[in-house]
Length: 128
Image (tube, rainbow, N blue to C red; front, side, top):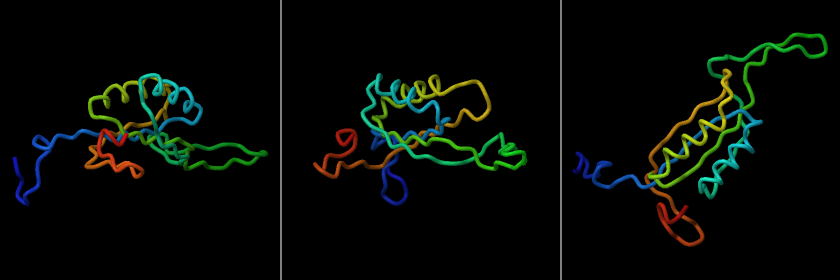
């Protein structure tokens, strides 16, 4: 079904690739990486970030002085997978990264319009 500007809706074109963005606690990175590798994820991008959510930072004592920590260290994972695999990846991250404490993180799943492997020119799921 075409939309107003001649573009195709998701139903016609079909989204074949998903981008999963997850923020997790830094000490969970290796455990999550191993679990994702175990289910067939072949690559990911990892970035050290700082942020806050519900916890809105906290106070710490350093050398007897109290100071506010407004941003908490986190790890951001960016993983592009075939759409059929997205739910399994999300469940794996969720179950592996969960500690049950505040600040465990978030997971977002987005549609990827196009993926291209620079070396070969392969596209979409073939580029992964």
